[in-house]
Image 1 (cartoon, one colour):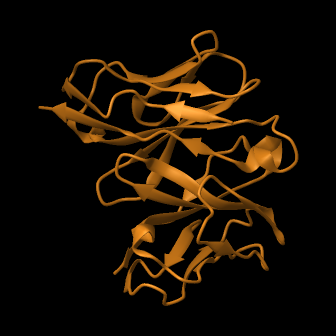
Image 2 (cartoon, rainbow over the protein chains, first blue to last red):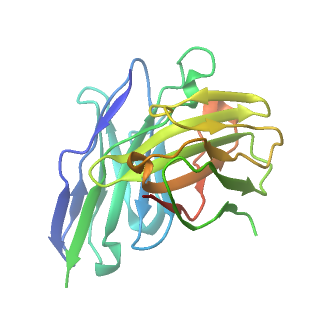
Length: 118
Length: 115
């Protein structure tokens, strides 16, 4: 079975400081990994993904994430946080090698609330 | 405009009264999926569909049904809703190519309250 853990329910940072939102996963084989963001009273939006290749992936709004296979992690980062980055962030994992149509399963973490203070 | 639409956006109902939440996408996506969002539990997948007439259970399928008779539509059916199905529901779609390496596009959500 596949799973995702976001160990921090909440992350608080000051504007202008770097931010990290942590994600670890469990899946057999090589995963597809995704980050989504949910702004208050809005739907979910895609931020970035890791499929293969370079372990550092860049996404929307200046966010990036580093895939670390040995630590089974995919932490979301941004060098300089903005107040407008305050939102709920979800990490998700898919197993592209799952048998049959099971690769259609997408498992999300419980989410991390990011608050950026002015 | 490319989008995923859900109806209704808000619904308050009573235990046992059958309801359907519709989901439609205009992007010709093969893959569609339903999730529920609950505080502290994140998003949990209910059902997904790889294409017309192909549906599979996600992690929390109990109490739900789906059908995929047309590519663009993927309704979620609650035959006998119970209060523990009170939640925020999201529909999503994506293309199937590359083993579903593409991101999903989410609908605006349906807030369901079962009393």
